[in-house]
Length: 64
Ligand SMILES: [Zn+2]
Image (cartoon, rainbow, N blue to C red):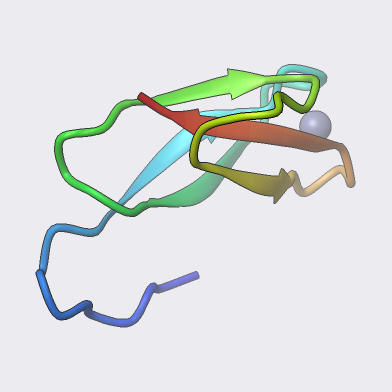
C-alpha cells in the first residue's frame, strides 16, 4: 500500500499493530508531526483512519 505523494510532502507511512492479532498494517499519517495511536473503538473527534488488518479485524488509528 503506497500513498501518493502530497502537496506538502509531510505525509508518511507507518506500520501499526492490530490490537486483536498483533499483525502489522500500514497506515498513512497525514502529517509528519503526528503519532499514530491504535484504538478499538470509535471516538467522536480527531483525525483517524479505519484500518483492516490481514486477518480482517477492523480498528481505528488516531493521530495525535
Ligand atoms: Zn487483526
